[in-house]
Length: 261
Image (cartoon, rainbow, N blue to C red; front, top):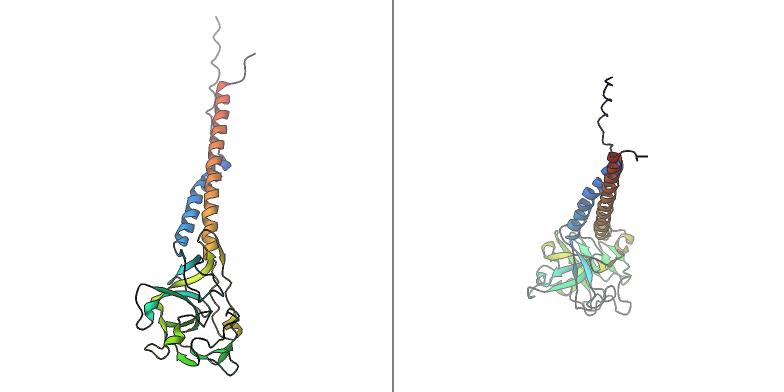
């Protein structure tokens, strides 16, 4: 009886590297990181409502608005700021007001100049955001104030009914509001989840004053990061499942061997 040599052993099966599997793993890991970054950025914003009519030329009564907390950026002329009313003398704590910054620390602000316009550091400012039916000098007629460092000087867009710095120029502090009393800047109309950015005014830079009003993009970026991160995670998770299932099917067919005839 003739002995035949045993057939050679099958070479060990090597598992092929799947670039798609690696890509989907990256998606699954990167998605939550991006979304988490967006959530962290979103913590710098909150939705507020103000039941006052002094800014109705710009934002409506009790309309939801997005506040960017103070401390995260510099406050500029033209910004809409929410501040604590006890920044003014003899005012009760616990309440807040919304007004527009018309001068910052170091500025000399005068109303009204020879051309019947606001003057900041000797430069006349045309203010297109004002209620057109309200005289510029309404509520507080002629005034001059020197804003100390670390403070701002504010006025409402409806200057006949607003409580603002102009009414306190003869009181201690000359109507200036310390930055420590400022809660933040209003950057959009709506909520943190659905909003329309407020267009920054160019009134002060047009007058030749440095420092453009705040043009916030962080809220939009935060929402894009959250949505993009969530979409990336879902795409990666689905891709992982499909890739693993297809790879497992190929391995089972290979292990079964060629069909018998």
